[in-house]
Amino acid sequence: MNIVPTQVFSRHISILILLTVGCCFASAHIAARISFDHGTGLLTAVVFRSGISLLLLSVIAIWQKQSLSMSWKTAPWQLALGLLIVIQSISIYSAVSRIPVGIALLAANTFPAQLALISWALGGQPPTRKVAILMGIILIGLLLALDIPSLLHSDMSNIMQWVIGIGFSLSAAFSFAIGLWITEHKLLHLKGSTRSFYTMLTVICFSYFIGKSELLFGGITWPTDLVGWGTLSLLGFLYAGAFIMLFMLAPRLNLSQNAPAMNIEPIASLTLGWIILGQALSPMQMVGGVVVVSCIVAFAYTKK
Image 1 (cartoon, rainbow, N blue to C red):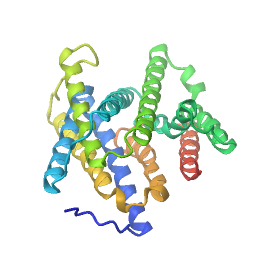
Image 2: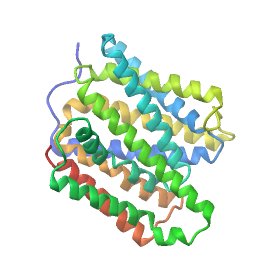
Image 3: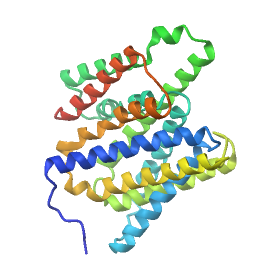
């Protein structure tokens, strides 16, 4: 029995839910940054949040008596999607641990522009003039958000931290964009519950394997104090709650019309980063952030 009604919510309810989801994701990133400062490893955070999400997805699958089967033809693409989300997850946390959370998420939220370019490269339609202009303005906004003149006056170690952090953010956007392309072109007929379940399972397995090998990102290291454990737990439940809420309610949210509301995430991250972490931004960085978010919203409303 399917317990999720097909009737969509009214628009103001849908937007309120999406704003809540976006703020939960933003709060999860803030919690991650605090937990990293108290001994938690990057891979530990990925494994922990994915484990909670997988547990909740399993409960939902059992509750709704859903089948998690898929064809062998689909399996390689599902595995590829899971590996891309592993890269995306590790990359975004690597960025958050190095640069202000809001800036990291601004760069990571360029994935719609990257998806348009990837789709074009793989045989799709080329971007329209309007989309190309928006891409250019997004790039200018990112440069403003980085406040290059101030950055050049800082020491070399700080410059390298920013370069590496932005590189990881753009890597997260790129891997997520490819994952979206695979979802749209290769996994379109696979049920969302099945796709989400195996994606999280792949993320846990590969992240744990990388962590135990201790070859990258310091391995699996747990928090050193109660603050670290508390923020790690908060990260896990905020991420899993937002993910499951979006997954469960997606058929009723009219995402084609209301999805731009999710762009509250970088705005909330900038605000929370300033209030909680003291990551104040210069006026130029704030202008850059406004430019990027505005263009991303406009991008979302642009028809294919």
